[in-house]
Length: 140
Image (cartoon, rainbow, N blue to C red; front, side, top):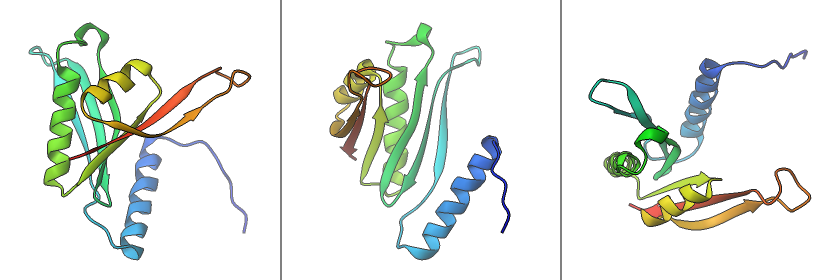
């Protein structure tokens, strides 16, 4: 069989994830598999933050959390996380997990009750030197 591998786009990424979840649903016992996106907006309607998440096997995965630099420190990230955790519970999730490579974010999630369950680290000779990624979880 001849195949061709090429770069693609976000639409294909959505299709790939959807097809994988469908195949897993057909072969493994599961809970709800759903995705959601939360948006934080200013009173003028501008997006100032957001969060993407999905559920699988009773776990809520916080994929991305972003708050505009000008609005950080005002509780927006905490509000997005609280809403995501609430939605996770209503979807039947017992726990949440995430990963981060930002030390300040690791402290932020720690304050929200997340605990480290693993990490990846680069050595001094690897690029970028001493880079770390923390994997964290929390019971809902």
